Image 1 (cartoon, helix red, strand yellow):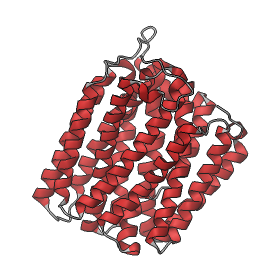
Image 2 (image 1 turned 60 degrees about the vertical axis):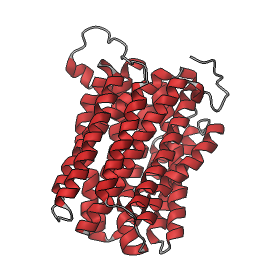
Image 3 (image 1 turned 120 degrees about the vertical axis):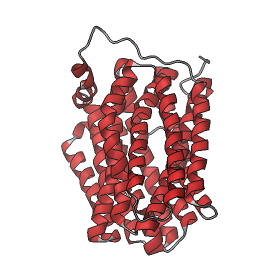
Length: 409
């Protein structure tokens, strides 16, 4: 391992294997975000249903959450690199199915088969997430965990910007089925960089631990570690109510009256704000007053969502999601650092699985909640309600969790 210094802002990037890891993960993120952007635009064009948008998140979240309990245990028992290779290959298969299915069914109003493929993608992501997070902690030394979390978050945000923007731009010129094929090619490049990683076997478990005890070990550890539980719970409920990304196609088509290219830009604005903030945070980590910073930024996120809901202007909507993304990245970095610092190596896969369940619940089930609320309350009122609930969650956390409020890392 190269000789790196803790005070070097680029310390973890000087490790060659960490760079290969980031390339693989970033390409997977680009492909997944391109895929989800095209699916949302495509399905809303076919159905004109806000509930149909919400069902995209639910279709991915349910299998992800159920399978993740097993995938986290798999990441703690089996070759983590091999897990990444297998399920990245399956993502290529899913993209091919989406492309061929779109060609065959065309504009058929029956979109049920899309949700089946989305569920398959959720299964792939459920295995990729804990294995990927467990590998990251083995590649870098412990003193660089915060630095690697920052660059991991930065690479995700940049990739998350590139995915929707590229998808929106391509949709202006080519049909969705061709974009799905491009996603398959991108997953192929991710597969290549994954092959360059070292073999990462988990450390041997002590004794012959019963399956049930091992299975629930990650859950027990998270709920027994107050620092981890409080930080990921705050993020869960804040984003569960305040998330709006699933409704962006509806806002663009029904309120802002813009096409797929500007829709892709708007969907990427949240991640663009996160990326810009992330490069600043790499030099000025937010962990010294972690609890206070976390609460302030989640509250700022909720306020931005409320303004977004009432905005009649594209530029204002873009700005609000951009600022909200910056606030959100503070939460990502603090939570990632807490999880890495407090988790023993033999538990990383299962703890990462539990953490990913919280994240998936807040994001994809949050999209379903938004779509369901919007189908009854209307777009603007549903998002205003979500932003207000986020502010209530922050207030309740600050009042009833003083340990988190005073936390320093």
